[in-house]
Length: 434
View 1 (spheres, rainbow, N blue to C red):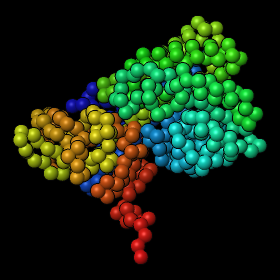
View 2 (cartoon, helix red, strand yellow):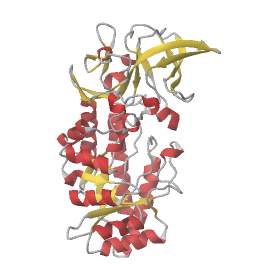
View 3 (cartoon, rainbow, N blue to C red):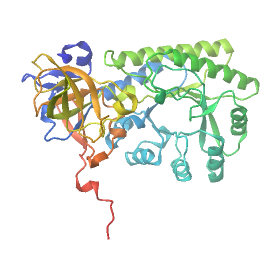
View 4 (cartoon, rainbow, N blue to C red):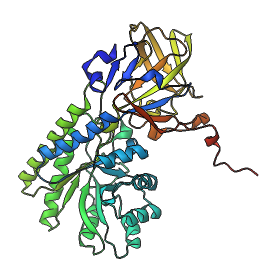
């Protein structure tokens, strides 16, 4: 039984007295009322992860540190409000994410804007909001920003590409050769833009930003990137250019076998020690430090509930179809992501049969789990898929016109809907007919 392990107990899961799976004391089978999926988020664990990040970086780094939650991983008004309550920054990369941050009342000084192709409307919104910093991605983007400048002096950073290999899916490696993000450190235009920014009277140049990728479990990539960037900062120092802040990006991965809390602690210690060592070696002062965690905050805090539909045998495979699939979790189709699951309403039964868990979309690639051992399943069972808090809701679609599921936040023995399930009427509310 999966939740008997210390790992899943640490995430808030337990077996209810009625043998159903519970989260923070709430019976999960009571949260799915029909044949539609439900996203469930452990609010207590999200807060714990945020507090661990803040505490760990303050412990291991002697200068100022700032945590900006990467909202692309998961965002709605309740999540933005939670971020505000924990006094954590918010990393946004679109006008829509900025709008949600403002709607939730996140202070502008706690908002950082990314994006490799920000348009005038997005840049203007960031200027109007007077946010912490705009992270520039190209020379032409600064040209556009410059055309919008007035009397206010916005803070800006420049995203650079350290060009280091990283052990992750190719589509999630963002700091490698030929990435669309940032400017290469060894490119002349990078240095020219840094000089331009440092001397520009209309902006405050805060520093540099890099991001090596997503779902990164090996810290070596961070070490290599820090080495490369600090070497570059030493060269800038020789030119009389001071970098106030260094943003290490995010990308810390999560697994099904290791607690994220422990990983956050070891990650913070590793990158802080490496950064201090390299700065000391190059005789440069420590910069202020920023970090942008996303997946490691919310992934293990989320699970998705599905109702089991039809089950059939074909060519030696038992297909277990659920009412959901690639519309609410496209990561398997996109990145071949691996997930684990259990039958929430029969936790006392041993797993005895292999299943291929598939969704209800008209795509043969609509697979949630390729092969998993479960108890003998029946139509109407509740399947819980773990580790779905990141990049499931945020990447959900209405393919085949399946409505997007609602979201529930679970505290201690209490829960609340924070995003209602999309209705069928909402599928057509923006359509126009004669």
